[in-house]
Length: 134
Image 1: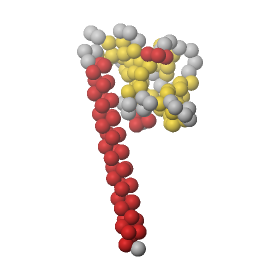
Image 2: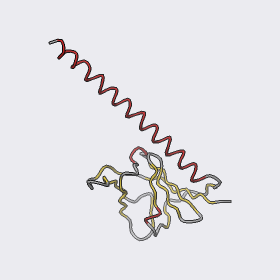
Image 3: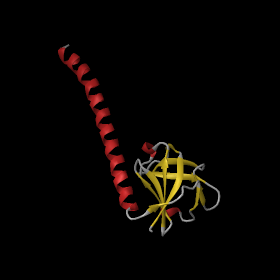
Image 4: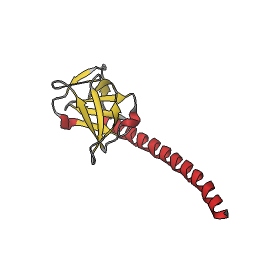
């Protein structure tokens, strides 16, 4: 009876510890994402935010974990921060329902698990901020 009681007391503590360590990992991932984005934008100046951008090449779209979606248009890098940055995970695939070669903040964006293909969430982007070299 004593070992059963001990197990019952340890299980909630272990679950709480797992939740706490998950939060620490999430915070670290967001901090890493911010650092990576800052390195990409170093030496660039922000322009006027835009609700849509021309993005004909999907392979230039990059997800930065828990931070932003970035489109590299060559001389300009466009950064869109989502309303829910924790939904961005580079291990997921972005599926954008769009028309033509433009990406807009109103486009429906879903995330899919790269391995199993099931939907993992939705992303709601803000405006695209262009960053260019002066």
